[in-house]
Length: 474
Ligand code: NAD
Ligand code: UDX
Image 1 (cartoon, rainbow, N blue to C red):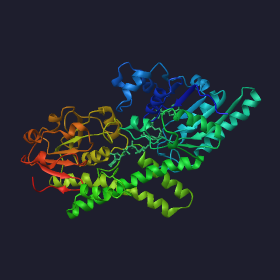
Image 2: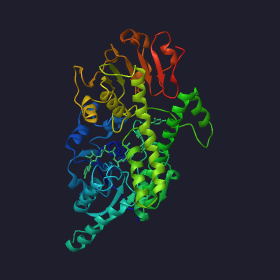
Image 3: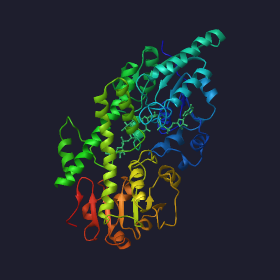
Image 4: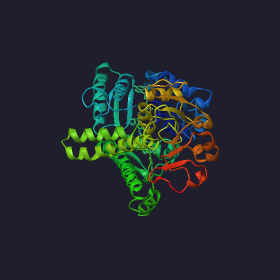
């Protein structure tokens, strides 16, 4: 028999938990959905009356929160009671790469998944369906199941009945388009063994997603499909970025090459934009995880195959930083450089693994004074990522950075402008005006291919674009 789900708890109110549960609550008004988090500040921000202070910026999210918050959508730090009441619990906590201990630099750190499972084991009551939503190594559901089984056994002794069904339902949303991805997903994956629990979960998704888009698999296939999807997507980006360098060397144009190959239906048009290297909290972490898993199972050559996707990605970021230095007469020491974009992609305030971080660090190491702009990222995030305090007075000896929300002030007296995130506001730049503000010879480096060559014509600005190289006919 399928359980009637009335109360859902989501552990982890981050970039996945927040939007996912907001859409679920929006589509299932009869279900009470509560997100819990150990981070009080984050929960306070989700509850802030001023919707511009939500901790996650995602187009369309504000409106959904406004419609549903404190009706059937709640944000709380009361983990114990929320778990106790829930019929279904989503685990949507962070699973970053381990920074120390066995597997450091490769394996996922599962301590937050484990602590979530322990919280569920301790506080739940009755029958609870536990859904693993975080991206995890294959067989993590076993870890959760083992912790919960212990508590099932103890519950018989203590007479407080507890039982659990563990499912895997990884999330495929991409930041910046999360709401649309959640409302119209290509597919939803449900991995498990307990048919009733699987039907209860699919019954929720079916309220707004066609049944034929819901795929049922065993738990391990579900877990591995998530890692594989991200590895394939990232591999595609490293492939097109590798070809972008070859285009620059040979005079071929990356846009023409991607259009030509994308016209083949087997390849497809999407996800073929060369750029400064992929960022975001998922691709690198999930490939490292895959590399580690392959090593663990003795598949050394396969592990090296996937690792190369990351090697090419890091190379793309480094080559862009070094190209900027080279074009500026081999030195950026004490030169002002404007950087437009710090988020890892447009339409998000997320900076995790953003290519802007390593490019900024390389330029700072070379003594540059960076003036950074981003419409959604706040200076404290940049400070955290660069491990360097903002300095309003540019340093004479070593590189420094400063944030400025005014684009004109960013480029005033700058030798170069590097465009790193494809925000709409950067597509409309008036380069005639910029050319008067910048120091000559001035450069624009467009790592996202969002600037048309025509907009620079007659300005005297030198122009470099990824996959095109230096444009000579300006
Ligand atoms: P996040 O860091 O934004 O959010 C995770 C939240 O979990 C944090 O706020 C943290 O405080 C909270 N948390 C950790 N342990 C907790 C506990 N024991 N109890 C209560 N709260 C706890 O992470 P995210 O970006 O939302 O990612 C979550 C998972 O989803 C990861 O496994 C990630 O790989 C996966 N994923 C992320 C994306 C994405 O676009 N960000 C997409 C698909 C899948
Ligand atoms: C990714 C997956 O797409 C998503 O399915 C998964 O759930 C989480 O990881 P996300 O990292 O949020 O999503 O964004 P995505 O659109 O995949 O972009 C990742 C990086 O690749 C960004 O830095 C983006 O700028 C870059 N990218 C993407 C390109 O450089 N070119 C492209 O054509 C597409």
